[in-house]
Image 1 (cartoon, rainbow, N blue to C red):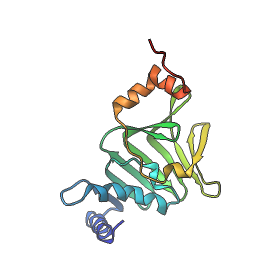
Image 2: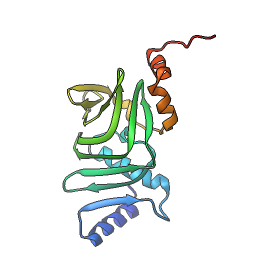
Image 3: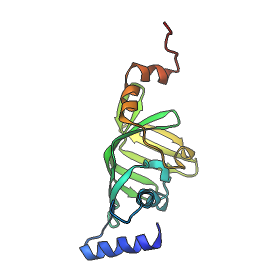
Image 4: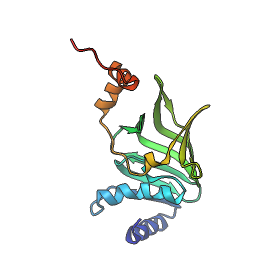
Length: 177
């Protein structure tokens, strides 16, 4: 985070009399600064910055509790390697070093089902990031999250949920008539 932006956020939080730091789209703030702020918070907690898509519209973070809320410009679909994830326009959770718990707003496709990701845990010694959805978990290479991912369109995601998506997921070819 750039020092002037950090000072502005600190002053805004102090003026409001609350421990909540936030950033929102406004005149004078470039979108790249805004997008980077939420993503730049992740490495400070031992997590890769590529866990959050590139379309951050605003976010709020409570330094005391670790609670956060991120608002995206819209819902989106992202491929992380061969794994498809769906991001709602609001993502909430609690961050502590190496973990995000009480997570809502992110779903992953597992076999034929969409499951809600509830916890993310970084395993730096293994070079992986583990995603938990209830009793289901999967670890992916941390390198999959090195860069901020670009959101795909809802139309692409809807298409991936249908028969075409299943055929693509299985690596099969569509029959040619």
